[in-house]
Image 1 (cartoon, rainbow, N blue to C red):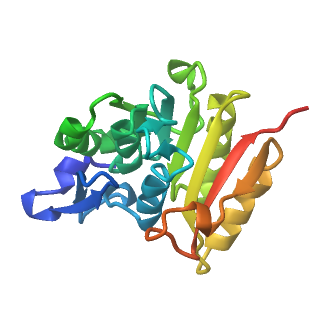
Image 2 (image 1 turned 90 degrees about the vertical axis):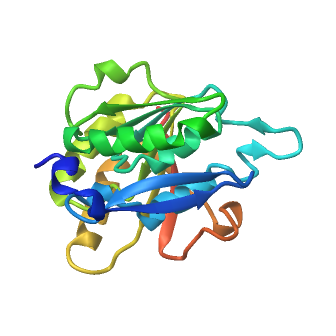
Length: 226
């Protein structure tokens, strides 16, 4: 697959802005051509805004669950979720395929001024391959709309198992789609995943009051305890 920049000329880039609760605004470059990872999907916005809900960020004293936490975003695409986490104090690694690294780097650079305490770096991670460079396990794994290709289901589950430790919380956000192969792919993913992980669905009242949808689910996943 070609480099995103090779497919996108200047006219192919367009911007999506995401406002945080403190009024600052993330500016995310997207590309109208090429890979599915070149755009900010709705589930990524829902997940990003969930990260700054009250259960994670205590507004009265400014404390944040994310402060100094190691966070890995899988299938990051534009990197919006990981970059958002970094602005909340996390030490985030946004991962995707080689061809999406230039877009990730562009968005990190564009939003660097908003990252006061956390950090964010972009790295290549192909699902199903060795994850030794990303260990020890992170505190959180974030993933938005990563469940869409049948051929990616097994490698994705293997990567989640390899990256996770007993204390790791996977936050999975995805849009339920009822057309084509999507229901089968989703069913296969959870059939494999729930062999090794416990699942808790986050109700709408614990999500951002504005950025939520009946079609978009947020799940917390943790390793099963023997």
